[in-house]
Length: 560
Image 1 (cartoon, rainbow, N blue to C red):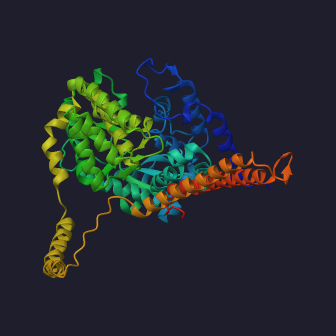
Image 2 (cartoon, rainbow, N blue to C red):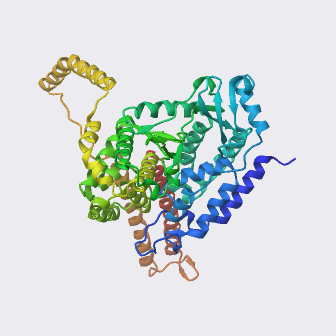
Image 3 (cartoon, rainbow, N blue to C red):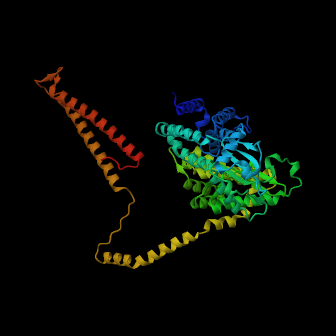
């Protein structure tokens, strides 16, 4: 009987063969001469038709690959623009599961019948996705909610797909240039953590609580809160919020709405979340924003989130300040410090392109879109062999989606001005020290104060006894010594071989009773000895150089 994983493996191999030689793996490139719009068909920016087919094939392969495509849509440093655009439009909408299966999941998770827990539960779903589907319901106390039900068997499907992807990533990282350059294993690890979070609805419930707390000070923002008693790893129950998606509201429908306060609060809240709290809603596209009847904006679908480390928060603060000041040199320096250079990284070309990009962006004045700039910076990094942190690309994608939402609600809103208006708050967030950090600094200061007299006495005693030594490791002396020794050995052997050849040439004119092919035998012997020595020396040089190259690649000490 054929293993289902083997069948899945072959499906994925066929997918890679179909697109492996296209511009998918050519890297994210920028071409200032490419035509604008989806019909641009250029090998540098990507073939739009091929990209759309790739997205459609991922969609047909099921939930794991739909979510993988959504993650890849944030990696502007890895994929050409045509592919990130196509993957952004990837639709996570599938045929709904029968209500009988929904009932079975709900009753199994809650340990009671639907009628015991709900006074009303709609048979037809509000939405159906690859991992779960959503139904409107009413609790027995009259509280109106929506219930997200996970599809039966989806965890087993994802687990099998991850095994196949892990197998391919291991092979690609060890045997292909693309694998060594992009690190598919690391990318897959990030994807595994993200997908595991989406499969556990308790994590999404915690995200709802966290974002509800972070937006409680903003009167125009609202986040539906979970009903924890009716929430499990496969079932999520939360407040039902009535309204219309931002994408469904036309320009005429916004004429009676004062959108400026909503947009300003939305932008300020996201800056605070990313730069102050270290929490990132990775997918705030307009379809996940709901405009309520009372003029508030609801944030939905918080399954895909990421954390931003304090160090990265500080770097993003400095990056935003450098961009707003039009300082391309500082922007390039910050990006270089954040990223991981791979083989072929060209620092000078990278700095020049970043300078040009920032200058062009700042020249647009109030039309500067921060999300677009961050996305373009990620692409430039990928072009020049600098791999930015994965969170950096997600921040760029989040800010890009935020730009689209704010421009739809209020076309006159200027994100650059909003950043400048909040620059002191952003800068203050970068200087903020947590209570734990203050306590750690106090402990370090205490240890320093306690150890200082004893260490000072040791230094003074060593100076008095003439034993004080100052060691500076400016270069690797041991490695330099080995290199010089190897060079001297090669030169010496080369001189000996050359001397043997010259001596043999002189002895060719000396008469001898022992001859070989009519030539003096002693001369022929030294010629052969010099030839053998030269061949051995060449082989020795090649072998030792390869060992040194492998040692450098793995960060090991050089062979002696």
